[in-house]
Length: 62
Image 1 (cartoon, rainbow, N blue to C red):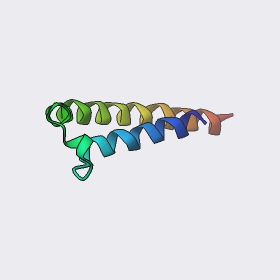
Image 2 (cartoon, helix red, strand yellow; image 1 turned 60 degrees about the vertical axis):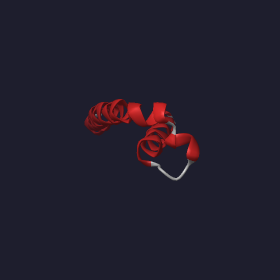
Image 3 (cartoon, rainbow, N blue to C red; image 1 turned 90 degrees about the horizontal axis):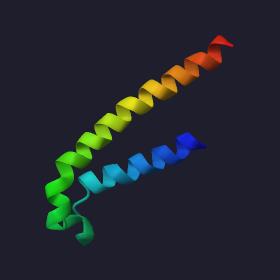
Image 4 (cartoon, helix red, strand yellow; image 1 turned 180 degrees about the vertical axis):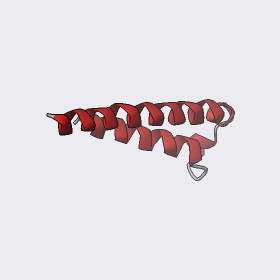
């Protein structure tokens, strides 16, 4: 359940980074922050892989 919520958040963050079709996302303030959003997306993705791979391996060990 928690994974689904995180996955949905990551999808929304990815849309914020890459979407140019929605006028709200073309706001200059958001455009200037896209590198920080991309950094957040990359870091969270890395942490998710580590957490969920470790969790999956722990389940297989039991």
